[in-house]
Amino acid sequence: MKIIMLGAPGAGKGTRASLIAEHYGIPHISTGDIFRANLKAGTELGLEAKKYMDAGELVPDNLTVKILLDRVAQEDCTGGYVLDGFPRTINQAEVLEAELKKINDKIDFAIDVDVSDEVIEARMAGRRVCTKCSATYHIEYAPTKEEGICDKCGGEAVLRADDAPETVRQRLKVYHEQTQPLINFYKERGILRMVAGSGSIEDALTAVIEVLEQG
Ligand code: AMP
Image (tube, rainbow, N blue to C red; front, side, top):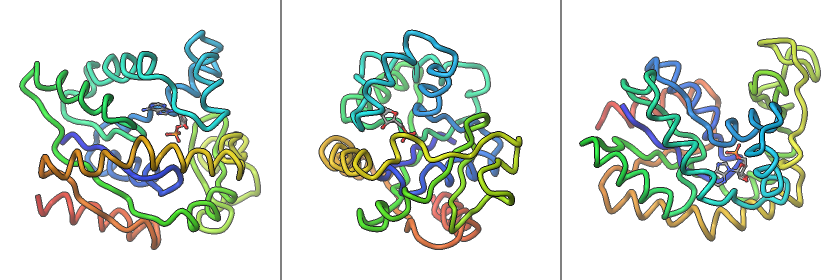
């Protein structure tokens, strides 16, 4: 099963993507995580991407598309994958569609996680991400057992620079302008499914699975 998670930054698509990936035993692919891993490793790609990420802007397609296509061409993706944070522009969606078509393949579902901007702004301020393993937490809804320490690996759980309030507002603006049109793109293809971005994490997985199994 090949799934795309849509939704504004902070809508909870990463959490859902990771639960779905675990449930179906397929990779969870986040372009944001790939950029952050590159930055940590000090690669040229990471340093270039950082300029855009810190400003709340999209990394240009010429950098983003290739890393994603290389990743989905890897062996572990043959049984499917969950894309989280890609595509973010119509151009990215078109390139992905064209590449998959070449190998007689396609995306099965695009799931839109729906949340209002106000809720997102409030949520992002409480978000914490492990600097070591990228596990995500929320100080209110999904706190670490020990404050600031990742439950999974003992790394440091911190507020990401691009989750700062002014950057979040810029990211939401970019989302509405460039990414939201993807909802119609996938609706036209008959593969768009909607889930609410509220509720508990357990309910979130149940809701997504229900939508996927209904076909
Ligand atoms: P995320 O972790 O998905 O919120 O991504 C963090 C940041 O990485 C975004 O705000 C963008 O700057 C960049 N990014 C991630 N995925 C993409 C993409 N598909 N296209 C352009 N920029 C991206």
